[in-house]
Image 1: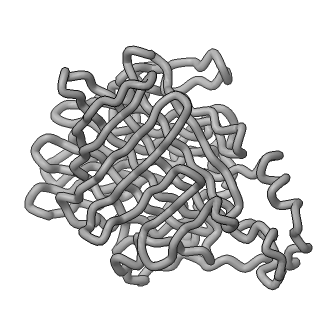
Image 2: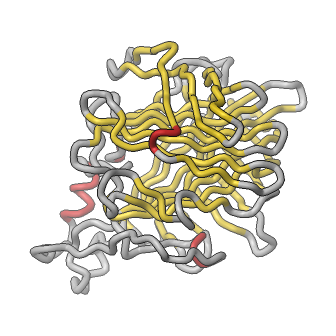
Length: 356
């Protein structure tokens, strides 16, 4: 989800020697066994990586909110032999958002910095990502802690796993296109139990809820003719966890698709491209960017028991996140509900083709 623009170019330009003629990044390959807690931590040799938390919160008065906390790490084409402390060998970005129906639009903020100087870091060996006063880390007891301090809102949340990591694709090797190297290492942690506080307009409110964590790292995430993707992660009340995505071509057709359903007893059904279909039910046009998003969709997936259909209904339509200020793309990231569950829907590449 990284698009380097003027903001990032400014970071790259300071103290950076010429990059090698050909920058070599690791290729994602099948057969690599994921190991924890090491793979919760950063993989700095790869081009792109993210820690992605989305979820639903509930106040004591019954008010429902959605939230997103996302940290991105990218390795620019900077000469690794450059000895300068100012060389931007690793860049970190972060997005945080709150979906509040009373406001009716997405509250969001963002951060960007090169790694180092006490401003930004992504730990290797376990999860601990920091960008100034924002932090996402895994505590020694296995819980995750997220802290975001923004002008419009503050999040202080603890996320407790209730299920083991769900390896996506084949043992964590997740195809994203027709070529084997169009892939990511990918795992999810669904059904995270959430407790903490949300502060809005200076008022702190205790909240509880449920969240979904996605972890991916890759050097070649999107095929050349890909426009963007539709993705959803859904926690169901009966303990099921569903992830589904499709990579779109520039003409809107599906280039690749996949996902999984994990059942309460631990059984997992992995989806082939033919097993996943998204159908638009309602669109919303952003007055800020002019992008039009399919914010309500019907998701059909082929399970062992047959085809199941889920209507994904947004908490409200205006959940667009405009990250252009820090070099990130414009995309729609919204809280959605469905029969017996709730989660998030992500829509990228609708404002312009997504560049990784």
